[in-house]
Image 1 (cartoon, rainbow, N blue to C red):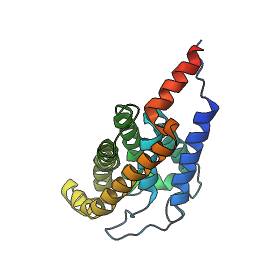
Image 2: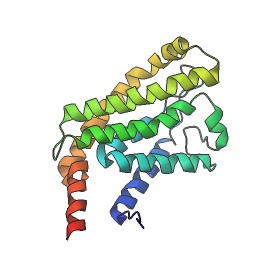
Image 3: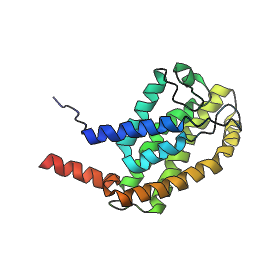
Image 4: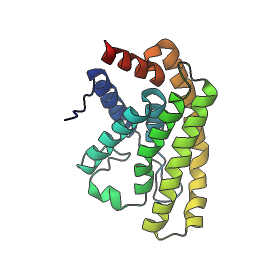
Amino acid sequence: MYRLRLPIVDVARVAVFAALIAALGLVPGLNLFGPVPITLQTLGVMLAGAILGSWRAALAIAVFILLVAAGLPLLAGGRGGLGVFTGPSVGFLLGWLPGAALIGWIVERGGRSPGIGRLLVASLAGGLGVVYLVGIPLWALVGGLTLGQAALLTLGFVPGDVAKAVLTAFVARGTQRAYPDAVPAVHRERLRAGKEL
């Protein structure tokens, strides 16, 4: 029988990033473009993907989403509970999981030293591309909008999200220089080497 073993260092990293995303939710969201707020939590999602890699980032987001579903007020504005999943921002929330996973996957393909360019492309692809791809249709469905209307409203989020992607690239690169084990590919190699010993 196969048993999933998660090293304690991975458990700690997952918990830290779930907590970081929750902490970024303490900053109130701004509702400038309708009922979907602008929040700093997307920055935490991008950082999770860029620093943790694909599966650990997805696990951190899954833990966060489960805590929100359980009723903890971890989303910007102190929102939490199952009611969040019937609101107009549900698609963006659910899009965080595949978005973070894609960011991590792209970064992992950068090897032992993913550059700023790769980190930026990864953050844009996952943090904007995937999150919007999930968020816009669900906003249209829940909010009674057409896809075009929801997409047009989402354009207001683009400048801030691009800024978060740029910040993510620089923070992740700085973190990886200071702590090489933070590079997802290096961490994966060390785990494999440890299993072989």
